[in-house]
Structure formats: structure tokens, C-alpha cells
Image 1: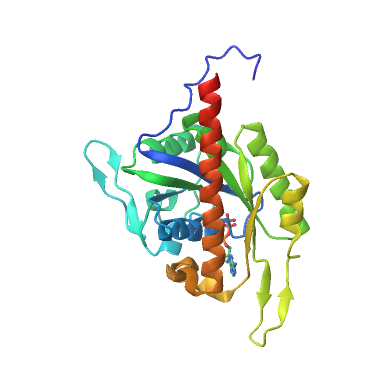
Image 2 (image 1 turned 90 degrees about the horizontal axis):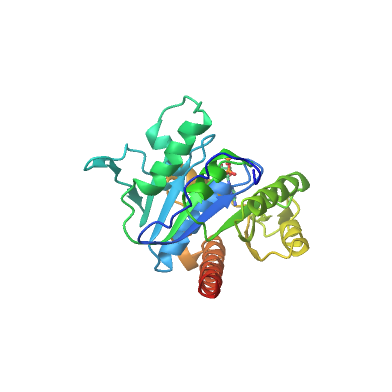
Length: 277
Ligand SMILES: Nc1ncnc2c1ncn2[C@@H]1O[C@H](COP(=O)(O)OP(=O)(O)OP(=O)(O)O)[C@@H](O)[C@H]1O
């Protein structure tokens, strides 16, 4: 690309009123990336931040179901989309634009347009955090994202299993390639506490933290496997709504605090660089 002669695309521009844009990615599908993105949004909002969430998971746009709001968004003015709001979080989803059971079949340019539109033509208002739930894997959506706006960083979700971590490492490589700082790794479905108190280790708890260490990246925390998390997602009442009152709520709040702290650090260090240069 460095040697290409094609005109350079327009430089990414910050969105007015939005402080931090944070991507949530995973590598492997089904590790609970959307669950983490949704609950992290709610936890950040519980901490007092203004939060928005873009569901850019073309393969499984589950955010509306998990937040319990599935109506089509209104269009205001010429061509501005009004985000939906659920549990204090503003959101927009590719699933609201193309509802139903049909899969999204799209070419890159159309996808790029949708991502741009979600960023620039949604009436987000003032936000401290705009989270973006990426599709699993490495690809087009991230490129569209970084070409449109500067990101504060990315959160990578994995389980402790070797296969999930193998794919998570690819996601780390992808973020490095597009110059997005990985704020840290989250382990989801870490352990499971059975009703009799026995702890079951299903996916290899702790391995995500090890991977974070290997890559000299922060480990942001883990969320245990818990049927309440799945039920909450299915019912549109995410587990994080319980806040500090439950173990899962506490785990999500702890991760949200770390994400907020890292975002602040990263933003401050970039400002320093801008001042020096
Ligand atoms: N900690 C957890 N405990 C129990 N169930 C969970 C947990 N995290 C996620 N799940 C459940 O696992 C399933 C997959 O989660 P989710 O849809 O968030 O994964 P994903 O990584 O976003 O998937 P994809 O990106 O492939 O669509 C869902 O049914 C969700 O409710």
C-alpha cells in the first residue's frame, strides 16, 4: 500500500461530541463478544458515562435482542438516524437496518457506507464512549472503521481455550496492522460455579491472562460462565444491570473501570504526542 499511487483516502476525523471510540473484537465467533460489548456498555453507563453502541456484527447482529429493543430507528431531518435507547445506552444495529432472518450479503463498499453512516449520520449527541461490536474475525469492518474515525483502542474478548486464543492472537495482529492500540484482553466464560459450589473450568480459565502477559498487554478481567448471563441476553435484560449487587455485575463493572482508565491514559498520551509534533 505504501507504494501505491491511488489517491489517499480522506484522513479519519474525530466525531464531534464523542470522546472515545472503542472497538470490541474477538477473532473467534461465539466467545461472547456481543455479550461483553452490551454489558460493558451498561456497566460504563452505570459508572455515570454517556454511552453509545454500534452493532457492526454483520454475521450476528444480536445487540437489539440483548438490549431488548428491536424497533426500526426513526429518521430525523434530512438523513440523520435517531439511535434507539435501552437501559441508558444509545445504540444502532445493522440488524435494525436489515431485520428478519435473512443473512446479510453485502459487498465491501456497501458495508463501508453503512459503517460510515453509523458513525457520522446517527444523532449520537454527546458521548463519553462509543463502543463498536465488530464481527468475529479480521476484516472489512475494522478497515472501514479506522478509515473513518480515530479509535481510542480495542478490547479483545476470548475464552481460555487454545482455539479461541489462537484466533484472538490473529485479532491482536490485525489491530497492530491498522495501528489500533489494544487496551486489553477480556476472558469470557471463564469458570462456572455449580449450585453446590463446585467450580468447573470449561474453557481453560486463566489462559487469556497468560496470553495478555505474553503480548505485554493489560488483562482487563474475566467473566464467569453463568446461565444468568445467557438468560439476561436472551430476555433483553443484560446481567450488568444488576450492577454491584451480583458477581457478574461486579465483574462487568470492574472491566468497565479499567476500560475507562485505559481510555483516559491513551487519550492523554496521544495529546502529548500531538503537542510535541
Ligand atoms: N459469561 C457467559 N455465561 C453464559 N453464557 C454466555 C456468557 N457469555 C456469552 N454467553 C452466551 O453465549 C452465546 C454467544 O454469545 P455472543 O453472541 O455474545 O457471542 P459472540 O462472540 O458475539 O458471537 P458472534 O460474534 O459469533 O455472533 C450467547 O447465547 C450468550 O448468551
